[in-house]
Image (tube, rainbow, N blue to C red; front, side, top):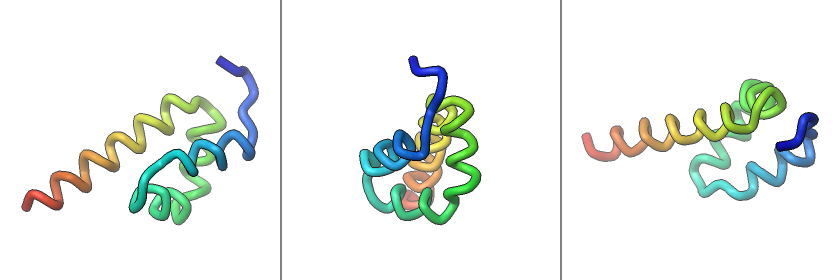
Length: 60
């Protein structure tokens, strides 16, 4: 795993995500970028929690 992550890595990672997550994360760019720069796994966990949350809302 890389020790230094860049904005370019972050942009590439965002582009791998599906909508509506990509748009939502762009709107939360500062918080998500901070998580990603600290540790991309934390950012992936954040996205998974977001997906789970959106799936629960759909079922209601």
